[in-house]
Length: 382
Image 1 (cartoon, one colour):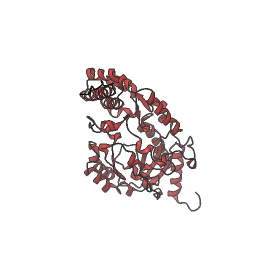
Image 2 (tube, rainbow, N blue to C red):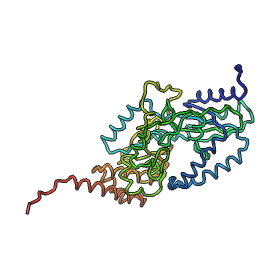
Image 3 (cartoon, rainbow, N blue to C red):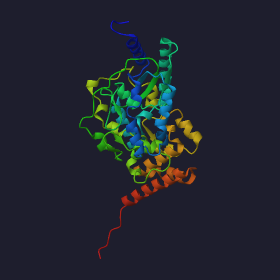
Image 4 (cartoon, one colour):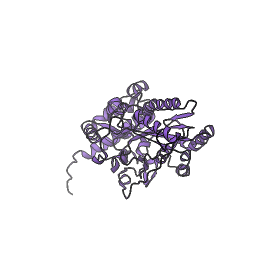
């Protein structure tokens, strides 16, 4: 044991070293108090109605109480980040724009380009859990990748992994905001890290860029207007006034992160190493990719076809009905005549009333655009 280090410090170093070896981009330790330190803020957000129809959020604090009651000897939380930032973001972004420009396609948020992050992270998190149990036989642990009522961003902030941005994302000063979070709870005494002192300064680019004005004010997100919520979490029709603002986003949205200076390539931040860069599971070659042809999505008429195409990826979250609703919305926004036939097929054949209604809206958008572009007969003066 190095001079001046106690058992807790030494074990903390070993845990962090193993986490980095497993491929996690960064790791920090948060104290149990971090679990509840932002609960009042969360409660106000829910009462304000900003959680929309995500009714599971209303039970978050209740579930958290049950968790703590069943883990009364909780001493430490190991918080881990996994990058999903593409190795060459500028080149990938250019390829996405070119793909969308050459054929009617819908954009996919970066986190969903590859495989389901829950399974990929859980696999390596279990390895870290096994490592801890070998080091301390009989230790109690609980691994979580969005499977427990944990305020992951608050925990990561308390563990020194980043700071809260005005877009409500957690931002790493040298790593941006394109990363997943997970946590490992334990009854072992580990040395907690200190939160970093950092903020967005006077920058408000994310607030200005949000098409739907979901960022009502700095650090406050109205999920009911967020494109990610509308295309992933919302069940049912998208509000007609919001549909044009969805643009070409088929699944999720990255706008408030794309404009963030912390996500811009910078020589001072260096390049990602294989150990800290995106895992192969999150490369777009492993999943849906950055953009999807709308005619193919609109043609998914059965659950079997839908799962055959997207099983094991995040795109199963809105289910077939939700994804086709999104595809109809994007088609209507693009006003692309080549999509008339796939939309008519949806209108006439799809078993979902939601999809049929959205297809009808899209067809009306295209028809209106075609009519406006048609040459008008010369007006004969009186």
